Image (cartoon, rainbow, N blue to C red; front, side, top):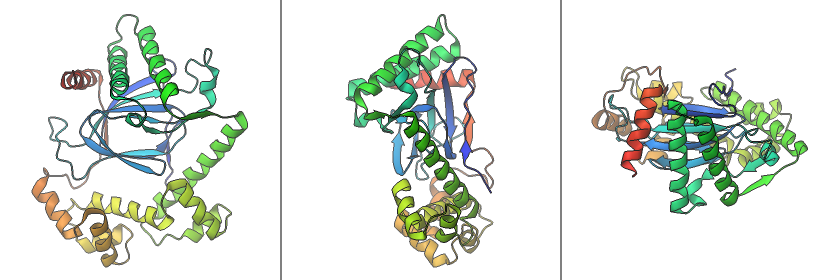
Amino acid sequence: MKQLDIELIRYEKLKHVKFLVNRIQQRKEHIHNEFEIFVVLKGEGIAKIKSHTYDIKEGDVYLINSGEVHSYARNPNSNIVVDRNNDSSPLFLFAQISNHCLREYFPQIRTTVFNSCNLADYLNEDERKEVVRLLVESAKLYFLESSYYPLRVLSNVSRVLTRCYEKVPYEIISEAQKNNLKQKNLRIERIISYIDANFETQIRLQDLAEQENLSPTHFSHLFTSLFGVTFQDYVNIKRMEQCIRLMPNKEKTLLEISYESGFSDPKYMNRMFIKHFGYTPKEYRRRIGAEQVEIKQVIHETETIYNVADSIGALTDFEKRHD
């Protein structure tokens, strides 16, 4: 069975803090123990955090709580060019912060549960710009390893975290509650892993309910409360994502794509496309050919982590556009 990606963060430069500049076409559901704050440096995309889906764009900054399932993808309808290869995948700056960071001075961080969010929902425009500026500045210091960069980066990270504590809803939970939350996350991991491994077949809610030792009715209500959509809607979303991945391969017929994505009836796939995009799969495929650059039939690389030079270049370009 394919497993949910549990990301283990390695801190090569600074203990408890890491920065990355990534161009992401697709990053499937994953989970890690760190807080994650990301800035969209360029382009448009889609971020899924727990049961919420967000349309993201350049300049946005989001906070993701420790231990929450999230994923990223490019916007299939975006024509914004991000790099010299005519790629429209969004470019991100990620700050990953351990919940042990500065624990000696603020022990509550260990059991803090933030409300994952678009920070613009809680910060005014000046505050949002300040957080973005601090993160971009910190990343440049981190990559360049400038003089006294550990002190300067930790100073900036402290200011960002302070702003989050001041403005973003959160709660301090007990160790027992944190262990319960961990068990809940393990259940989410099992459910997502099972669906990822089986959505191309006639997957049944009853089978997952049995795996979790729950009645189908109880599991159905639990699933909707965890993911914000019904079990069948979630499976259909997975199948739609598979359809979109297969569409650029002109050697595959729409009938083949339908079956390989788990839709037993091509008419059902048609209804899903009309519901989500407003037009049929045939029209969607025609628009890909007419509006986008040529797409390789098999895409091996869905995420590119920039090297130091390219990271600095991307951050500097962002600063110039947002001075």
